[in-house]
Length: 127
Image 1 (cartoon, rainbow, N blue to C red):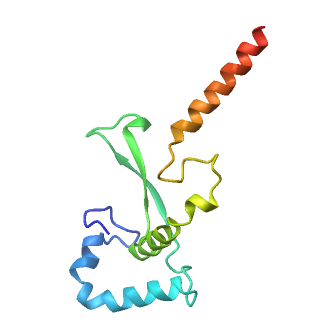
Image 2: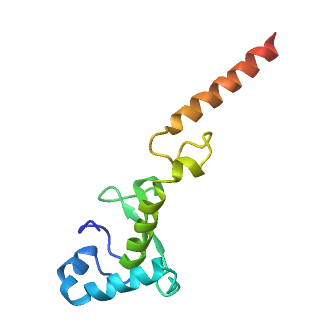
Image 3: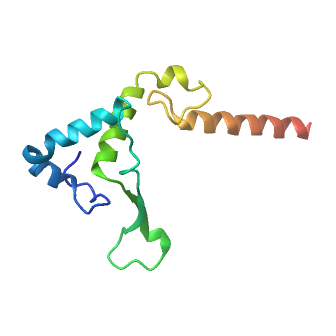
């Protein structure tokens, strides 16, 4: 985890876990492996808070905030591991017409295709 990421639900930033890894490392690894191997549940750590972080010094409009979610570091570790495991099969599982979830595909390709389709229908209706 990047050390300066926002703190988790328990208020501890990832840097805390790095600093005290020698104390909690074995427990963290054990818990994550148990969840990933189906021997434990994420029920205890599956809580997320959504909050707004100001983009400017004195925000006055909602657009001057950005949303962020505060998950526990354990939850982030497990979900990141699952995402990394899934990257290898995403291209086979996701339809070729869905482009937003596969790194080698661009969402703009679908936008251009949709625009061209609408344009073609509009031109055809004018004839």
